Image 1 (cartoon, each protein chain N blue to C red):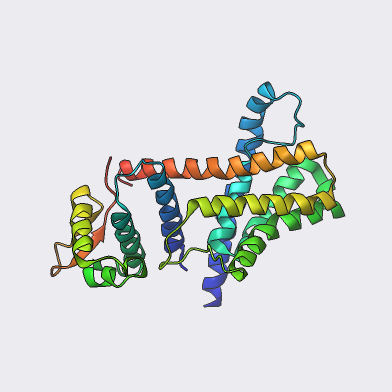
Image 2 (cartoon, helix red, strand yellow; image 1 turned 30 degrees about the vertical axis):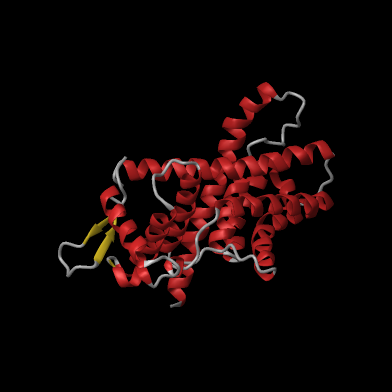
Length: 97
Length: 186
């Protein structure tokens, strides 16, 4: 595990704490998509939708729920669609506020 | 390849040991004087908010067995600062060995018992599980350290409270730090 991914794991743990304390406005599926995107982004930078759908954390999430949560995450500023790429690629963002 | 591994170990050791030393000084130079104002009958050594325990638990969770090496310089320096050169006496060397090995040993034992908490990309993190692991690590450390030193039961309860609160507040501090960095766009 690289240094960056260790920082990602620590960030995921503390985000879990933040969510438990009601300091984040994400649903369980949104949180898992964000975790999965953070994992994939460590190695690839941008994340493809299909890579997220096949992630272990999202295996049991239905397609409509997945896309609804994905859209919501974009709206909340956690994910941003890649501008310099074909559709279906996202960049993990850190929302302000 | 070997050079990269050595470099990675050096970075981990530097970061973790520095974090341990900073947590120690924050605990004993800032928090302890405040605590002594309110809990005058507690021994001077028993902190009710022992942040270094949080560093030990998080390091062992993130690094596994490598945390033993990463924690060692920090723990030795803290022992020398607190106890002078008597830190090299057998009982204190045993306490140092316990302090650096028990966290990794507990996570490894939990893994063997089928409760693997170590971070992995395909796994959802669980901070209450880490708190529970921190409690177990504190209990095992206390029991083993009892053989090395020998403290009163009242002190052990204070150590246990200090360890658990120390872990919780360290995670809380880190949570708000990450949150602050995120909000400032870093």
